[in-house]
Amino acid sequence: MKTEFGPEMPAFARLASGIRRLVAPNPSMMTGPGTNTYLIGEDEVAVIDPGPAIPEHVENIIIKAGGYIRWILATHTHPDHSPGIQTLAEKTGAEVLGMPAPAGEHQDRTFAPTRLLADGDVLETGEFRLEAVHTPGHASNHLCYLHSQQNWLFTGDHVIDGSTVVIDPPDGNMKHYIESLQRCIDLECDAMAPGHGEVITEPRPAIEWIIAHRLQREARVLAAVQANPGLTSHELVPLVYKDVDPKLYGWAERSLLAHMLKLKEDGLI
Image (tube, rainbow, N blue to C red):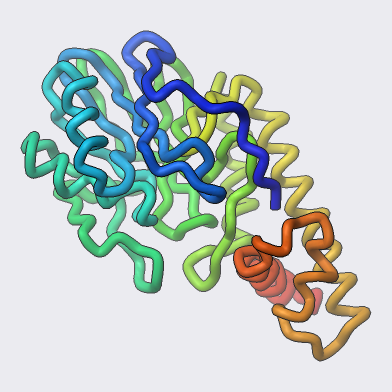
């Protein structure tokens, strides 16, 4: 569980032709500099992840978009990514695309897609083409979006810059997460635009590091469980996450539980 975000990012940046990034003013230990909102296109604009429902951020999205905001896409429905959609949609009349919020805590119940997306669905305009890539793991309804012209993958919280993400059962699933990471390698994209942090220009080594890190952590979990039968997940955290700030132990326990559930599914514990 790594939380080393890079230096402060500019609040607004043009990243490539037809791709702009606006950082929401919600910095924290878990969100880094803030949630990245992406504006795709110039004349007709698609907005990916308007972030939390912060009025000034929603207004800034409209101003920076310049053109007609026609679509709003959610990568997933965690509270730092999708609550701003409702206000933005009301102000612009844009079509809302994504997967419905699953049951459980930490989900945005205001999210009401007007177009449900499934793996492989495409949004195509005269300026760009975005393909939905279902990547469950961090969230069961998590979608990445592949920009065909740039060969960039907008990864939401599936892959972020400078940190690993929490896998929080029961909606979070470690086995699905690792499988989805491998699928992203297979896409062979040229860059990844994450939900937090800077653009990742070398996708394969970045993803391979995450997979290796998760499997190393899983090996520690397995060793700790075998050496300490009967301990709870809470009691195992200090043994498995010695390299993590104790302030993060609550979140670390969620990922530890996700590892234990995967090990059980794999028949190892």
